[in-house]
Image (cartoon, rainbow, N blue to C red; front, side, top):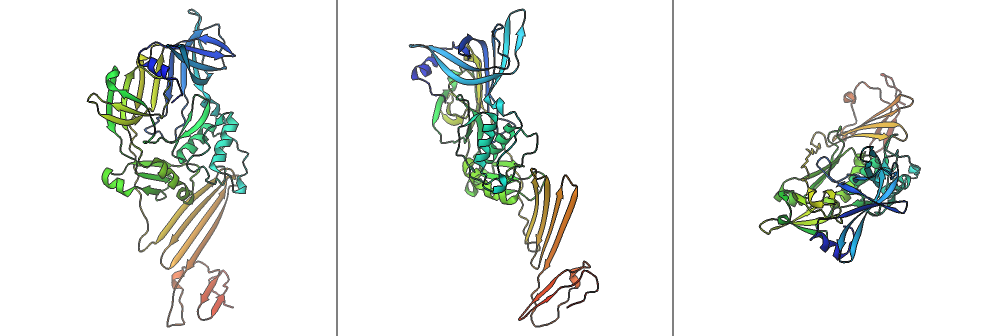
Length: 448
């Protein structure tokens, strides 16, 4: 919530008339028919989103705003006169002049627009000391915005290579960081970037009484998140999962599924990352709602709110969508849509015949190499195949190693008929004494 005076809050409970202006190059200009769209909900989810605020309004055509940055203020009359709320800086995108009315419609975007440029990195990943926090800081520096949140889940995770290919936008990097930290990326009214973890136990910023709104509906309660899955959408059996078993017993599985995150491209990395994400989102729940009525522009998306229904029952929720209209805010829409439930089938592949199996594809986009590892372990055998392909040279190197293990007692003969027809390169036998035989790669072996 934007910090405003109590007189402003009181005025919004009595009046529906607002005043709007922009400040451009230290000059103030009156604007009309304002619409502000602030959203953090996309495709059934909020975690990992990085959505810009969009602003549109009408202004006299004599004011040149094309390609300009300006500050937007909305105000309301109080006992002290008109008090203004600073709603941040916006960048003009699409001026639509009308030669007949001499009025121009302006479409503008907040500072998230600055992240719509290609991401290039100067970080020394090979030193193996680059953290996720440093990646976030560099992304903001490149975009020309200030990073406000320097402490978030997985901030100290070591990023060993640049996994973002040429053409990746900084906004996509920011979204990936938000996703792997269980946060939402937002530009607030101070024009700084925040990684926000929505907390059910956060401070309540506003209590909404449905009886005060022309259109209002309470929808279903979302169930608490009690399962987090990190995986690769095109590789089966690679999901790393954490669960709250007690919550699942009472509420069923309610999952946050994160697939194909560029920072979690190996199973080992997913194991490192999942705990902080799980701790950030575990137990997250709220009551879904929609309502239309007097908007409160000092509220911000992700604010904790409470909804009081017509019977006086109170529900905890959030402000996820805020579509504000001015000068009369009575058509403002506020809502928290339901998060779509998503689950994945996690299968433990361990069995008596196959104790462990590992299939891993490691893509290093900076070095332009693809490494595939297939490892199969049984009680007696360990087989490891590694394939490395370089994109530039279109070369493929295959290393195939099979290790057979047998324990033999009471005999001095060992038969290798189950070793297959592949040439044996090295044979090692250990007993009371160690015997080593190096065999040449041909079918008829000669021992030394």
